[in-house]
Image (cartoon, rainbow, N blue to C red; front, side, top):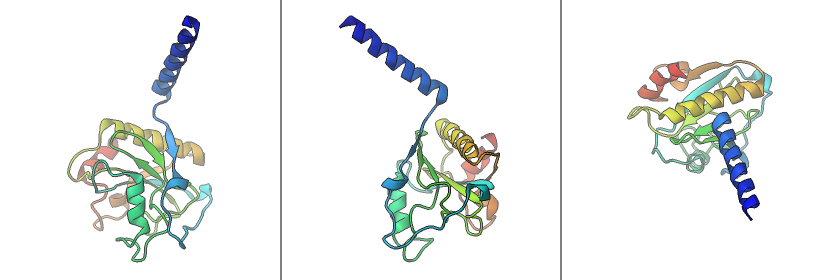
Length: 182
């Protein structure tokens, strides 16, 4: 019995060490999120991706990917009759949990005129009101590195506001300033 306990404790310590070394995992929930009954996003090759665009949800701190996807699939500020699905590729919570919410080959509609060439990463919260958390920024950095590994090259990092000056406050004043530290 003692030998089994030692093995279990050792395995748990190894798992904690691995998590500490490699950080937060990215959980792919693409197939679990609400989708429009008839609409679909177009596709692209990963070779077409040139940039990563950072957004904020401009909503509650505890807003979930499912809540955002439900809003996007219904009539909303982007699509009068609903969009095909959530409009981003990655979603980062205030606690630093990272979700992949669309495949990289999906052309999600997060930035008019730039969707084919960009990947949308959204941070949960309203960064006009408060800064992103340290763990959230660390998760953003990890997400950027993961995307670049998947496409096989470095990508330009920008924000919604950076690509569309004057048309939006996204990702909020605080996060806009914090992006420089990522």
